[in-house]
Every structure is written in structure tokens, then in C-alpha cells.
Image (tube, rainbow, N blue to C red; front, side):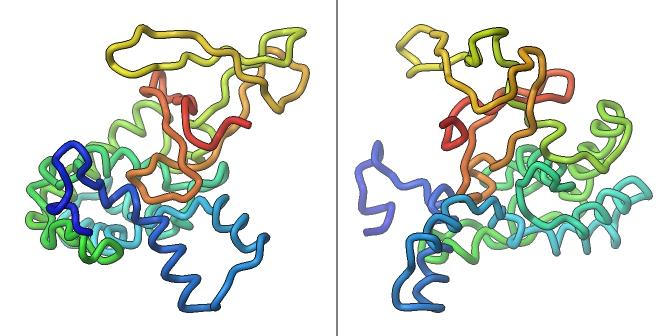
Length: 234
């Protein structure tokens, strides 16, 4: 069933299903069945499928239309492993660029090939206005230099689990309920050391980047964001 056949309130956000579709289609192509350990490895996979749609074109556009800062940012993205592991360098930059671009590309003038829910692994792709796409990358790079002093930022240095409360082994995590409900505070038991003041590096990425290991993160504050929902908490 395609999204236009669904009631408006139930319309499928196909971009959120891209990573699942990737696993299903890849598994079907490689083997008729999956073992438990294969499924576990897929579930914990942090690869950002959206990067395969845009990074190569963005790097090429930066080299064709960008200044020194855009070219330096492009070099970081070219070396990026396209994952959201704690040591991945490039995840942070791509997340900020994708956020600036927007789900429909409206922030950069649109995508050359818009999202098509019949082709979830192939679309969206390309840029209607490559110059605007590069300008957004340059803005992200400038902000990263101001905030971190470098473009080479590990994802786990920006995505941090909050400190554990001393003597409890419990972290305090703000829980945002549905819009009609008030904010609450939820205690979440942490897998951590006894050091109550130490934050720990996170991994996984927002669903919009197409990672199977999905986390939702808080707004950035002083260059740091916290996991707030997803499969991050055990």
C-alpha cells in the first residue's frame, strides 16, 4: 500500500523506513534466511543510509563550487565511514548539513530527484541548486570551527550520555511526553562506572539519517547533545 492510499493521519514517512528496507532487501539478496546473530548485527548497525544518497554529490559540488572551508569539510565527509559510531568523524557534520537541508531539501533549494516512496533506497538524490547545498555545508563547517575549533569531531564527543547520579547508578533523563502532556523526569538505569560526574560517548543516529540503531537526541547546547529516546537506553 502506498502512502497516498492511506488516511492522512496514517501517512507513512518512508524516510524513516529506509534503513529497515535496506536490511530486508540486502538480506533477501544475500541469503534466504538470517541467523539470530545476523539479525542482531543488523539491529545494532549504525550505518547512515542517507549518506549514500548525498555524500558523493555533496563532496563533488563542494570541490566545484566551494571555497577553502567547504573543500576542507568535503574532505572530512569523503573520509567518513558513513556510520554513527562513537569514533566516527563526519557524522556530526552530515547531521547538521542534513538538518539545514530539511526533509524535502527546501533549505538548499530542493533535491534534483525528490523522495519517491516507490523507490525508498534511491530517492531523494542530488541537488537542484548545488551552490546552495555547498553554502549550507560551509555554514555548518564555520559553526563547527567556532564551537569545537576543528572539523574533525568524533560523534561520541558530541553525543554524550549524561552523568550518573552519585551512589545510585541512575541517570536523570528528561522525558518529553506527547504534546498534550506535561514534561516529566524519568530515572533511567545506566550501564556506567561509579563515577557520578562522567559523561560517556553515545552512538547511533536520528532516524532521518537512516541508521538502524536509531536514537533521538536533544537540542545541542555548547556543542553537546544527549540521547533522549530510541534504542539507546537498556
